[in-house]
Length: 544
Image 1 (tube, rainbow, N blue to C red):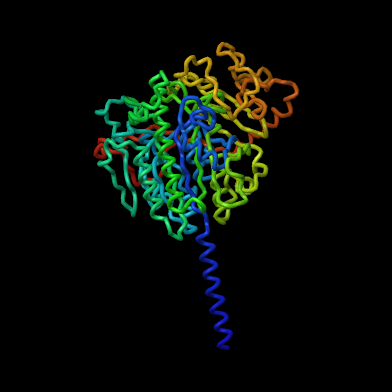
Image 2 (cartoon, rainbow, N blue to C red):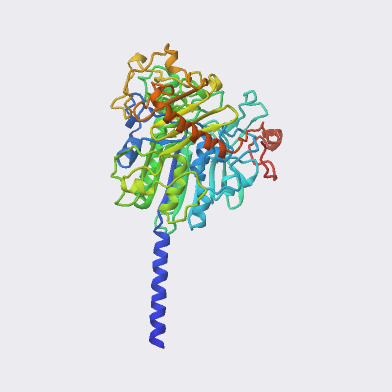
């Protein structure tokens, strides 16, 4: 009896040790999100203007995801990234959440931070939130994050950390101007005033490194969501901001706006390098999933007061052309079975796929209602993508939508020119500052356009129209024509493929929820809250 008890106890202790090892062998997870970074705003895509040595080095030691798709705007992409749902499943498909709106990710949706927290992870958010904050339940610490350092809104000043409401006049004395910089933790919501004058990209990196240092030698896995402000435009009075020493790196770019943008990108790159170096130096890199991505394509030629570049892809932020939705993305996954470092993946991946991918990597059951699919096995083994189609977006307010089925993209409707200064959202825009612009060609581009770019005067090539359907619609073979030169929607041999794509888009329309995009709540305005942006109501009901 005694011998049996000893064996039982030893076996039980061994099981506990085994269980503990299993629990804490879960991979750490770090998401690094750049804001509005264009396809041609990184060196490894062949840019002849910007310098991104750290991101390029990471590209050489990770998987380059060259068919990684995001939404064409900030809030929808971030919502998809953290929920595993299409934006149209959340009511966030129309536009971004602006200051003072009573909108957020619905509370009946579970975020990746909540899944991981419930599995024993420590969870930290750093940087831009932009997923709702009208009630505390919608803020990061109400959505599964232990701590949050950063800002709630869409944009702000990089140095004084104030944010202004775009829909009101913009002088700083205006009622819609307020501080938006904070540290939320331990149930407290603390505004930060003493970071005035410090560049936000540097501050966010300092916080990220501090978070990482707390897990050096720790057995507890962690999730850090690091969403940089860069390179999104700031407030309208001074939309482009970078430290002067970073701007001075680019005397060859004669256009001052693009030169400042290059400085912003260069500073971002240096800070991304600091985070990646910290993972190495702290001994965390080997067991950490690292995803670097942009939230949407770059805004070009003053779109949203920004000067990014997606060349040679067509389109800008806001648009459903490739320049708006095919995003820069790099991934590094622990494990010897993963794709070889430096490999280039053409696997079709949507930003919503990262929730199920991470859950599978962590051994957590994947909920069946997600729109995203796990790409873990595909990335680990280099196999086919787990998806053959994806929804780019459905916006019932503008009737502008797009779906990808195998190689084919169908776009229905057209986003209106001129909004936010986006007069060239359907163009193939080379970045300003090249001499001459007509000679701008990326070095070793990763996208082969397979044809001659249409002239800017060739309106037939630029127009999205179908004579067959008698409506605004266009269709492209993205594999053969990634730069969307040739609209194939009316070709006779495309009839069956066209009808299949239309049927799939109709399916997604049937399952889409109505968009929520109300006017700002006047009770949110900063003068009512000591000239700060804060959660302003206990009522968690969203407005439509």
